[in-house]
View 1 (spheres, rainbow, N blue to C red):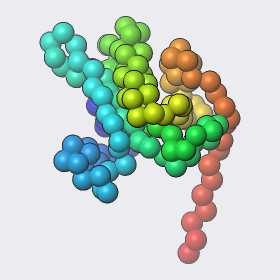
View 2: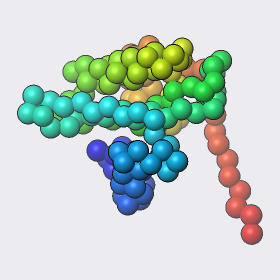
View 3: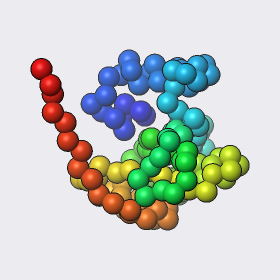
View 4: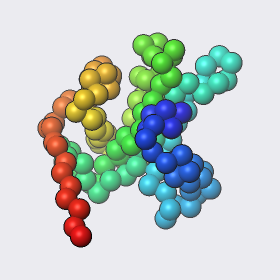
Length: 135
């Protein structure tokens, strides 16, 4: 599912990230928590991954739990799976004493922006990031 969320990412790198998290190699993993949603046949139909970032735009607390990835299989969308994953992330964050949950959305991803809004997220700013390669 991670490769469906990030289709242009290197598959081996996606696998290394999960392996570092699952094997508790904390220094190698950016992930702090992950939750998977299963259907009645116990097939994975969605996931959410969180990190703890030193800051996140629009947030007042530090560190702040940040949603690094949130995905629900197309056939399972609009059935409460996404909300359930967000609820699991919120519960994990509250249990850790955190008061905010952050996320971001690519400017062109209107579906994700709507899904975040449906789960109670407020847009705090828009940003276009730039890069210049130095020879």
